Image (cartoon, rainbow, N blue to C red; front, side, top):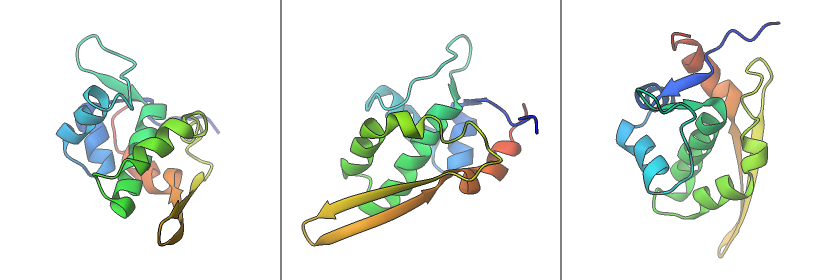
Length: 125
């Protein structure tokens, strides 16, 4: 099956897909250095790898809080795996993250393709 899903996303499109404000997307790029636009002429555009990183950040910040450094740490440490999570949107990809905290061990499953596929498909290619 041919991949007909969009491959690049503006700040506004990425924010809409992820359900966050555009300022949050810009913050991850400018202040945190966690994502880098691949197209910079005209409007900034991110590829699927960056979108996957942002999706992991959103899901983990939902669990551990937006002020927690843990989500960013996971994205940095697991970037190689996360960057390929959206290569094939017809294949389900689930990132499993384990955090051994002070009060217990937590396992978080992030089903990236399942959560993002329809929102990505709605973006004009």
